[in-house]
Length: 530
Length: 75
Image (cartoon, rainbow over all chains, first blue to last red; front, side, top):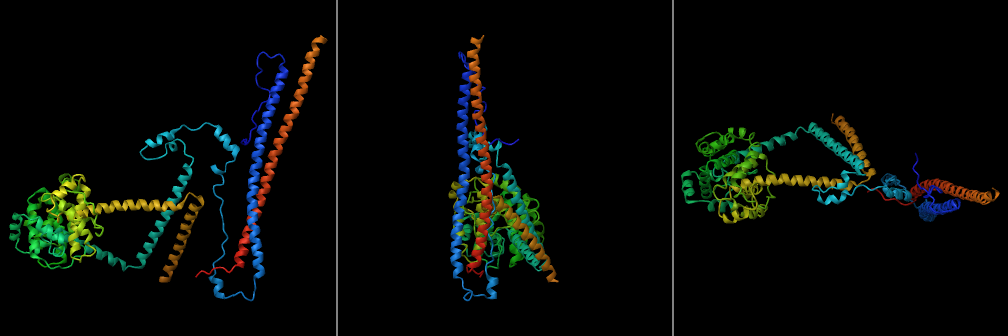
């Protein structure tokens, strides 16, 4: 049934009730009918004005377009008379180099939309009942959505279609990327070599981290100032005596330096290493808290052992201890010292359990050391995104750090090292990452409110152990940062799309065409390679 | 009877006359409405043809302008 666009209002002329107490009813009816006729004429004139107004507006727009066209034609006429075929350059190169002519294809969009509704229909729409005023409830919603949209949403289907289209375009883009990567893998088998090398480096890192800080053979101690602070400040007389018992000077130095991805053989200073060794030993006596650090230290030790084997007899004990810890965590103390295992065996079973341990460790460590772990406000930006094993090491190291001095001091000189790294020579960075690891790890895990007071109170305490927690915290923040970045990227991608059906469709078609082109191009490349 | 019929008859006659008048009026109103509708429709169709011609003209002029002007090269 067609919709009546304009309805002249008093539809029935003589159906009104005759008022009581009227003698001449016929005349009464006649008069009321005539009055209704006048009302009808009134509405008719209103509609007529509306009709003529629409037509006038349309004709006006055509008039403006016609005028502009006229001007352009005049300009063209003038230009054409000025053309001179003798002067004009015609070179074969220019013919191809000229920008191709492309007529402006303007697509009509939103033709049948709320804005283009004619006035009488709008009036008819407003005469209808309005939906319930659910929008007054929207400020009380948590997810900040329009409350009325749950009742009636005119844009629902468009949004649905738009999401579907965007999803389709992204899927196609990903497929393209996968195909390209597959093609590249097929074409370049040499690239696999790089991956293998990276894996080896990680093993070395884990080996280094397997060592406790004292036992790492690497020399990261000397250049970093924080190192000196940590090693000296955290020492107690008992530790120092223990350090002297350690014997070899170079050996204890390494564990205190957490895993260094680019560890190079460094000169090992005896004093700082000795100071660090007793520190870890004292931690070993802690029992459970100690369990975690040794395993972390073992990983570092392993790495250091694999990288720079300056003292083979000493690293093996530390490495073996770290390796044993990977399985049973709480055997730490005895296994850590008694074992004389081989560093080669450690990485093999250290790596697989590394990923599962970190998540369980984190809550335990947090509960145990929430007060000590302070939220370091500085995620180490210079720290390269560490793999999970370093993170595991960080967690484990972090667990034992509170038992000795809390990580308050690390938080303080985490800022200083963070500024130092870009200017520092290679040795300092290995020392710095540990501090970064520890403090962020503590920051993420522990309650931030308690952190600042504890930090300040324990300034001269163990900074080295915090390095691992810093690493863990950095990892977590990296993940969080990535999520935020992904969200922002997604939002940024969605922003330029706009709400145009035409733009969305054109993007999808463009993606499909480029995909088809790439497929055909890929096939051609395959043929050429033969 | 005649006396009673006269005023009633006169009234009825008057009423019929009024109704005829009203009928003429309403039918002319309907004619006006029909005219307005048909005028609207025809006007819109003519304006649509005009629009098509304008669009075609615009495209042709765009093409001629591109031919006549010394276009920019790609490099």
